[in-house]
Image (cartoon, rainbow, N blue to C red):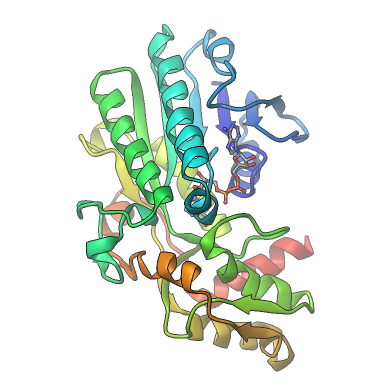
Length: 310
Ligand SMILES: NC(=O)c1ccc[n+]([C@@H]2O[C@H](COP(=O)([O-])OP(=O)(O)OC[C@H]3O[C@@H](n4cnc5c(N)ncnc54)[C@H](O)[C@@H]3O)[C@@H](O)[C@H]2O)c1
């Protein structure tokens, strides 16, 4: 079966593709607006929201599409028009290509815990808690989840949404995510560089490792459709941690010299967005469906260290 990964040149897209290759997939297509080169993978450069990239790929038989292409949190907050155009427009293009196809394709949408917020800010959320996002990013993702549910109900696709926690530790250059500091506060000091944390030590975040999150995205595609019912969105397991606890783990893994490289410099805009996200995730449904979680915060950081040393 052909597997298409939109946003395949991004951080999670690349990890997912690596995992799919390890599982034996050999008809892989990565779509990205930036130029991408991945050994053994066909790549298509273009804007999913505006270029007709999918119809030709969907002709030959049922495919699995992992839809990861997105404008991310702070980027969406900074440019509403672009976020709506790319995140909602991209989803509509994708669903329309599926609707017009003669096959029923499986679509796995990378959503986020930022679909929660406002009334549930700082609280525990679960798969059936009302979504009241307090940012444009979460709003576009909540709309995407609803569109996935409806397209599945109509029989246009077999859709699923994986609600991802904040992934740490993201290697390479930071992207426009407001949660980026939660990766930077490990990545930069472990490389001997300074890092700035724009929120207080008491801030709680729901986090997951990159590897576990990529595995969960892949496993959501493998779930039997009937087990999901009408609401196709599943919370991917994540752990709650305060920024203070993350700093303690940094010190444990990288020593006091790494900890000393982190400066706390409050930024109101980032703090407002981060505080609007949930602090606790009831991930019972995801776990019942067989999605694994990370054992603890330290193992997430150690798995990053292992990943960059390979
Ligand atoms: N990393 C996290 O902590 C996290 C948490 C929750 C949800 N998510 C979601 O997971 C997905 C992947 O996240 P990531 O961290 O890998 O982000 P990323 O920014 O590294 O990757 C996204 C990729 O999508 C591409 N893209 C954006 N708009 C596009 C378009 N219109 N057409 C084609 N390609 C386009 C970008 O060029 C980029 O390569 C996103 O949908 C994101 O919202 C990520």
